[in-house]
Length: 446
Image: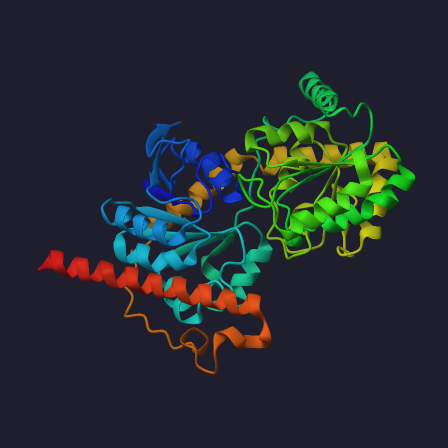
């Protein structure tokens, strides 16, 4: 089959600037390319060529900078309209489904959801129904995300499948073998840690991810383990060390903790495994309904016990008492401190949790296993009958058309109003794309 994997506009593939979606695509594409003609479509990057073939995969990087969804969307539609594909898998952008269907009507469409992208602030109700109609399959990274779709749109239930993500178990060596011991020793020497207990956080520095709660827990941790170190790997956004008010507030929290906390800033993905190798416990402090953070797979592969929150899809992977500790009191720094110290106080328990996590990902969650499951879904989609063109899409939603008041004043909530305005802009861009495609197709037929 001719398969197109359509990445988001956030960052390029491979994930030079980070990104869970980009990592997922880069890892599964070579496996799919063993039996299929695979094209990965993404944004341009100064460190990557516009076109290349690597590991049997054709990479097409469109003339659109990272972050510019409008430019990327138009370039994407133009490219797809000039090439034939049997299956197009769209990652995390349901708004692009209808334009892609119009541009390449013979292709079967699969939507891969890594976040709660079918909620009303991401796709208006008027577009959701025709979008679901033309999709052959919907794959989600957790049952939590699957439920978020089906609870809103029960008619989509038969198309929804959960495909948990994966990890490169060779990149994240388990504890024990000489290779991992040498890497652990080298990283600890580089960081100046010696045998100090090391707590690891990997992720963006955003309020949703909760690093502030983890920092607030550190004084209690240090009372029990005065030599403990917290290493926070990540930055405000992918590929940059630019700060914002929240990051500056974190830096102010770090100052009194001195050498006990290290903020590394942005670390390229190919170096992140080094930090996992030197750690003793991994913490995911998510405060939002996390789809299922891929860092859990990486921590398990590295053989680390995990402290995480009972938010979103996290508990689907991490079993409390088996792989780590899952916190119901995710907003309470004291709960984090207690869980971290319980693990540091019990090295045998920590080792058992780490071994259980490593065993789990080896058995069920390697990227090769993910690619095999995804290939089955894509082949099933490819065998399905093509969907007919949708009727003219009309926007009757009061929220989008401004009925009932100025959206700037909706709920007296400025961030919410900005979200709605962005949705309106994106939606009208999508409608312009569909109209443009139909006009061009009509001209070609004439």
